[in-house]
Image (tube, rainbow, N blue to C red):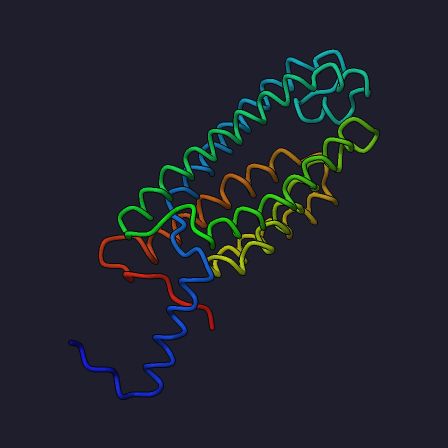
Length: 227
């Protein structure tokens, strides 16, 4: 039998680590972030082509600019196609994240749908669903220029809300998304570029940091607990 560690500080650190593992989902995969970022960049390219063809009657140069200057009737007409494109991007990103995160939890001998995992999913879902419905209303109304900033802001808030149930790096990704959303409010005509920066490059950068820190061969065996 392994003797108990007589060092009180070491015992407290060990107890704290056990509490962290029982209350926080610490098996997010960095590769899932990279995959989601790649999906977002591909989705941005497809969206640009779709907008150029869908709103070609607006007389404005540039696919996203055509959307901003389109009528409410034209936007409503193209809504099914945009929802299909958006739903496909979300579904593919979720599948990529599920695959890599499940693989990491399996290798670590942990459960994916544990109590911390459920809390993390709920913390993410509530702001995302509310934000998605809010942005849909903006799209159907006269404030379509606020849709892209709204997506970034609500996603950043969702990450901040979920950060208390998972790795601390999620918080900084959320802050990045909120910052991009605020700048996008000032430059709405560049909304698709900010989407690519936030959902694409932001996820890729976050994923590479996470992979190098926790998953790369020779990296730390387990995530660092927050201070």
